[in-house]
Image (cartoon, one colour):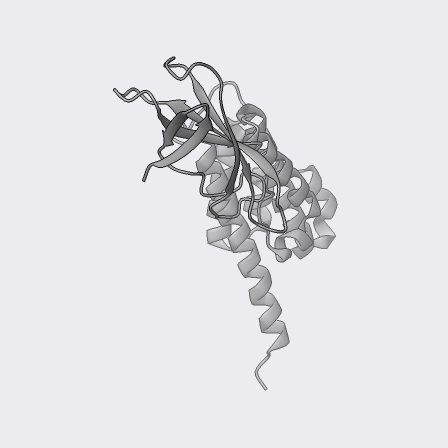
Length: 225
């Protein structure tokens, strides 16, 4: 639904929609419009419209800019939403069981996520691959502490095949390694898979590790009387 904006000096423009969330806190809302400005003559097809908005989330209440581009229409005053800035990076949610297993994984995975957010995708893939190695090795050390030095020094694929017994975890982790290696090598082997597939496999790996940890926890706590 179009919304009409008064710019002053008798100029009125229509926007296709108001932004539906704050780019800083990511809360869904209808923000308050504080100020509107054109970045050129309204008759110019390259003219942009910028709206200064106020976040209605009281825990944020920040100001941000929503940008609109002029549409190709017979009416010179139609504008289409493009983006709101500045966008803030929100750290990924990582379960407490995974954090307790590998603090390094949390740190590296979060940094890789931020690199991807900043469109540094070539670096993000390398970071995700490194985070995966820390996660798997730290998990294997937690279940085989007497093999710590061997686990640390071995190739990741060997660690998975030698120390991971759960087949779901082993299969997901191995495939995550395959795609992670593609992010670090000159020639890709898995052309039909990308960074999104790598992140899904890492998430699956986290899920199976968390499941294993919680299963063991409740089996120990609730032995049959």
